[in-house]
Image (cartoon, rainbow, N blue to C red):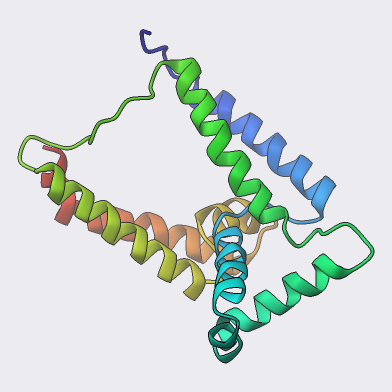
Length: 177
C-alpha cells in the first residue's frame, strides 16, 4: 500500500482542540498520557508484589485508590487514563494502517547505527517518564490540558519543553544527518 499524504496540521490541531473540549465535558479532566502509565504500573506492581507496593508510598497511594474504586458501587472513573492510552495506541495503529505507514523500520540518519538510535530512543523515553512525574504531567497533560486552562505552571512547562528541545537538538542532530 502506498503512503498517503499527511493531513493539514492546523486542521488536525483544530480537531485535537475539539477532542480536548469533549474530554473536559465528558470526564471533567483534560488529556494526559503519563497518568495512565502510572496507574497501570501501580496496579501491576500491587497485583504481583503487594508487599513491595505497600512499602513504596509512590505506588501504594495510587494502587489503593484504584482498588477502592474498583470495589465501589459506581462506575470506575479512575481508570479512564488507562482506557485513553489504549485508545491512543489503537487509534495510532489504525491510522498508520489506513495511511500505509505501518512498517518495521528504524528511522535514523546515515551516521547512526540502528542500535545507537534505539538506545537514544530508550534514554529519551526513560528521561521523559522521570520528568513527567517530576513536573506532575507530560506534554499532553501539562501542554494541552494545563495550557488550555491558562495555568501559569503549564505555560512555564511548555516553554521549557520547547527551549530544552531546541538545546538538546544540537547534541542529537547527528543521529538524523
